[in-house]
Image (cartoon, rainbow, N blue to C red):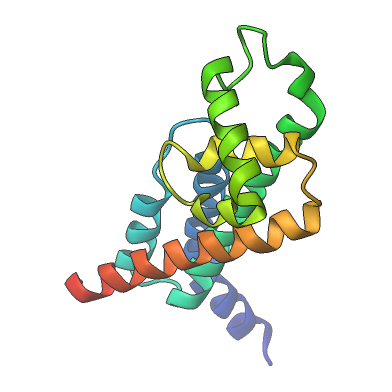
Amino acid sequence: MNPFLSLRLNNRYKPAMSLLAGLFASALLSATLLPGSSEAVLAGVLAAGKSPVAIAVFIATAGNTLGSCVNWGLGRFFSHFRNKKWFPVKPERFAQYTSWYQRWGVWSLLASWAPVIGDPLTVIAGVSRTPLLVFTAVVFIAKGVRYLLVAGVFGLFW
């Protein structure tokens, strides 16, 4: 392949790479206890039409799952600070989520995609010392289904 054509092909995908990097960052940060809306960013990437849907959904799912792993780490390694003012889950909520997690176990992580309850659940999973591999698999499935639904709904209206 001649060098000019190779450069031209690479330049064609540079905007998509930037969009996907932004999507990954948005999804990662949205999964932590920071506010964010990675669903809107996914819709924007899909609207731009620069990336296949499957790749965009995978990137969003991977970023969001990694962000949930950060929460798991907070729970696993910093739970002894849970009564401190700066800890991301208030003591009352901590007790509520812990009780729910103990009742439903690892399957409660299927709700990790849900607003308000999802992020604290991932922290509690770390506190409960859920094995990281099991945690990651269940959360990846839950988050992946959510992004597939977002892409599907977006596809209906776009």
